[in-house]
Image (cartoon, rainbow, N blue to C red):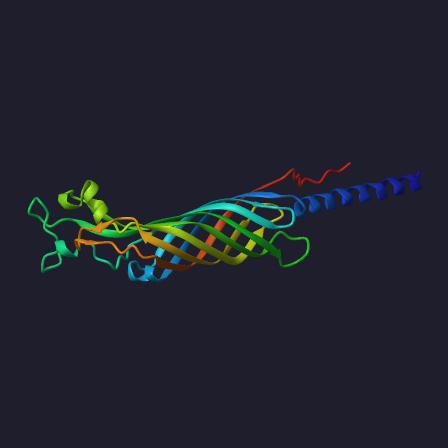
Length: 251
């Protein structure tokens, strides 16, 4: 009887250990589909720094991490800032720097930076240690970068910048862009804390979309611009594991 109990205990321990190891292997050897929600800050350089200052951005991404930790995905970034160095309303300003509206009052108008990046990315996750899905994350992306000056007239007292006229002031610029990210990615085995954070670099090869700038009365410069950005980005990851059951089964 005692020998039988020993055998049963040994089999139970071995069985539980096997299931626990299977759960570990499942976590390490399955593909993962991620939804990523991010936020960041960027600093412009090259031609973009002549037009805008620092900007913030929201990001949304969907990606696939394979069993071998290759990364494929799509991403969208919405950029916004309040520092515009090109005063597209300068020709409307009085000596006191105010703008007189059609109602003979001072117009409540301002300019802001807006932009988007849409692209596809590819990269690699390099775990720092064995039996982990966390480590160095490196990705490269190619896509479309677009940015413009948002001109806002709160009181609606400036008919010269309404409707289609607004297109002559917004400096809309668009073109192909490359983007690189390097940082740390963490995916917890219990799936509760999942994120990545690191540095992101963008190089845009853009051109003006508009033909004429109404504030200067001159044709826009159609030569290719180099719009650069360097920033810090952090994202929360919502992972979906392929056929992954992390529950331990006991008999």
